Length: 262
Image (cartoon, rainbow, N blue to C red):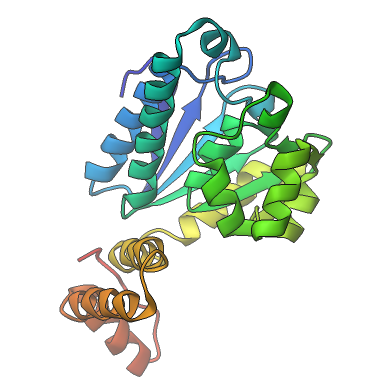
């Protein structure tokens, strides 16, 4: 994939999408277009189970939207820009592959909103910070922050973080449930890739993982009975697949399963 601000590497069944837009991976329409294309490439590549979204820049994952762009654009453009960003992040959230944000530096504003649209967030320990400081600009987090953050950490903590605009540490984010893992900085990349590969074929069935994501993402937005119906539908689909038959057979034979992604 040859894009301007994102490059995609494939390592077995794990892809790594590198953001590289100096100085701070701030996003405009061009970077978001690259992100959208990358999501499509991952979505339609049968050889990818997991995608790790990472930064090539030292000390920063993403500082969010390009403030110069927003300050100089018309209200209509800003409205369309926010809508476009939301739609792209929704596409990542609805793609039945796992996306992991590998955060090794400041992750603020719209950068955190991108990270929250991934399925899992791993981070390095360190002095860098995470937060949604949009209130200090007189606006709110408009790329999903007001909706995804309370779903991850609860309403009270979400309002606290957004209304004050304060920054928290990676350890705080782990304690709050915003991050899933915090690894030692010296081992961050090795631990991240081991974590990602552990979620991909052949350790796990990519089909099952993808449908778990779909059941959770869509089902939690439904009434319980509708979510349970979706769960049954997806489970019945898995029952008919070769991986489930292999999983049951391997369990009874007391051996590790050999999944095929089918």
